[in-house]
Image 1 (tube, helix red, strand yellow):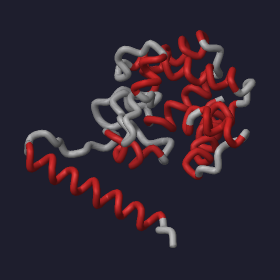
Image 2 (spheres, rainbow, N blue to C red; image 1 turned 60 degrees about the vertical axis):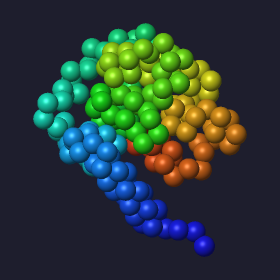
Image 3 (tube, rainbow, N blue to C red; image 1 turned 90 degrees about the vertical axis):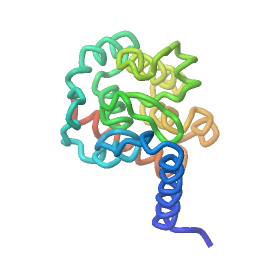
Length: 187
């Protein structure tokens, strides 16, 4: 019998609570209270609300527009697609870190960032250029097919090649739909 999503979520929340308890036991000052938009849970707290304002102290999306324009021009991407990817990945949080270790605005994995020449994945310009380059690589690999390139960005190119389609992962399918919808709204 498979567990429901609610059961999995409860297990994850329990595990997070256990980890936080261990961190506090080791160093009570180590864990700062989570702020909206900081870390994965904070990003998810408002990432689904497209019109949500960034938390206090974080630059508005417009602050990254020149970097997005530069990266889109360099890698021949639609600026709207790159903006949508950043919105979906991090909700414009340059300090975002996913549970799997993806970092920054475009949520680059450490090995991917290194392979792209990104020295500091939390530097917005480096991260946007790296994410744009990686997206361009996926577009080239999948012959300009934006849904497949986005699926590869999210689930990895091997999964897309294995299925010869968007993989049957709900997270990836929702991600592709969301990014394309955001890109369409932005044009």
